[in-house]
Image (tube, rainbow, N blue to C red; front, side, top):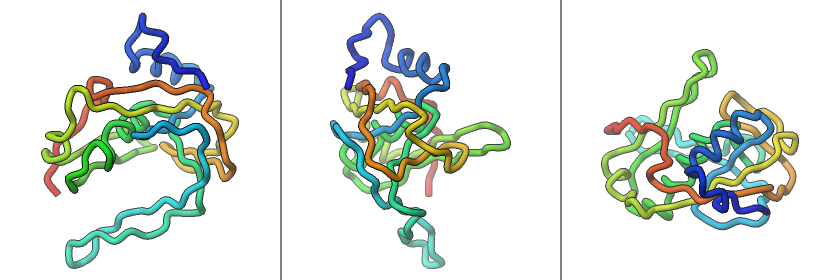
Length: 163
């Protein structure tokens, strides 16, 4: 697995943008170094009538990735490891408008320091199948082809919201 941080003539975001433009790759963000990805059960958080959130299974166990670097960068930097104080963050994807919106609470953003980092893993697209506009899945174990370390400065634009 190639470490793309070797290509220091460009920022990590610029390297990932170049890869995204080819249409040949999909991306997965994580706070952790991972050599091999195994299918895992995903969960959706659904707000209940009492205002609490309940997690429910979201489809079959799979390895999840996105054709969009912004989604992977967001999850690589904004996650439980980097933001241990519980609060909310997420994104919405609109396939009709071909747009993504990322959001987080002030509490999440206060926890993200300049030195906060994560990893964006790069996979060849043919290893995955489309699940929806912003998501592709593999139901088999997959190894990334490349990875790159990203930081706060690589994040997409994030809207601050109160939940």
